[in-house]
Length: 495
Ligand code: ADP
Image (cartoon, rainbow, N blue to C red; front, side, top):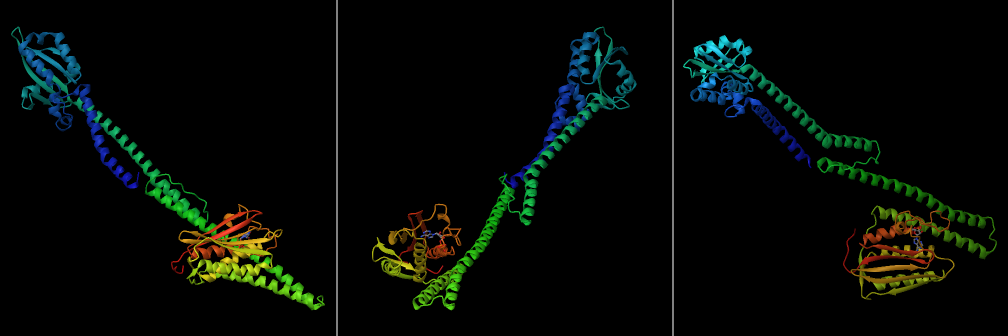
């Protein structure tokens, strides 16, 4: 449930609660009727708005019965048993009967009470001026409502009956019931308020507190403080977004840390890779200076070794500076439409010639239409090929004759170029990482093969700029195939 709905429900509860309380009060007041206060028209509100009228209505049934008995069964006014029965009924309504015959009280339903009010009642009846609805309300220390009816006894004597209703007791009872209602109402309001507060607290303040702690933790650099989404409203959404932000930040920081770690590792690798040829150059140069190379042939050998080692170092430094330019997007791309078979065929031929003396056979296989045109930056793709062929040479299996196949296959709107070798292969665990910068499968660097771990990262970046993809397939001890795709025909823009 969203916050909007929760707040709407809270407001509805706040509006409905008083209505419910009024209803409960009404019910309790009706309860008065159940306990014998039922008025003639059973109108609860009337008890509160017109108490005298309600009081009159209270005993109206008994009054009517008595009045009709007076006419139809005058004997009943002498009959104590019948009068006692009637009095019992009236007692439940805080009333009693008084029957007077020839100025003498022959039946008094509640003598104790009547004694207290007799004088006032008799004066009231005598005055009759305050008569209301056939009854007299006698005010005083103990207010009563008195209904009066004339009686003509069967023996010819005259008299009257009274129904006396104790107003105070009734009103006290009503006040007590009203107070009970108010207390129950107040308790209900308190319970509802507590429930509402708990609800709002659980759904707003607790998550906000969690968010506050989360923000503080992140501010203090603890990016492992997780915020779970526990509710499906705006606050839940906020927690979710917060969690997203935390994960994003953590990923970025982890990546940065990883990058820094990689750079540290790379610096150490590069310094190692530079140190080896430098030591060799120094050794050979000293050999020449000290006259160790005493004949022309030996001197030439020393000098050639120095040139080879210096070239290795140049390549290494060149690769590093190239990657740095690529990484900073400082290298412009110049896409051209070239014939794929022509371009890659020429590449293969030059490698074949170059590597023949290194005991390698380079084969070119084309399975595409000879007219296929690809859109490439020739210089960058040449570097891709150099890196792939360079790796095939670097990671060769020295026990067998080296074989490198360069193969072109059709791949829909692209051409796929695969470079396969029969070298040492790459382990399954290392394969997903070889395109990451500074990654080297041979971490221990025991093989003595020079490398920065950025050759394939360069390949990956260049091919991505060509909107192509790079794949690896390799088996340890058998060989490796690294392939990439480039788009056919259509001119591409600089990325
Ligand atoms: P490096 O400068 O170390 O050669 P690369 O990015 O070119 O860096 O290659 C990453 C890693 O992938 C290498 O260290 C090597 O372990 C592995 N690798 C790449 N090409 C081959 C291959 N043809 N045969 C075996 N291993 C390879």
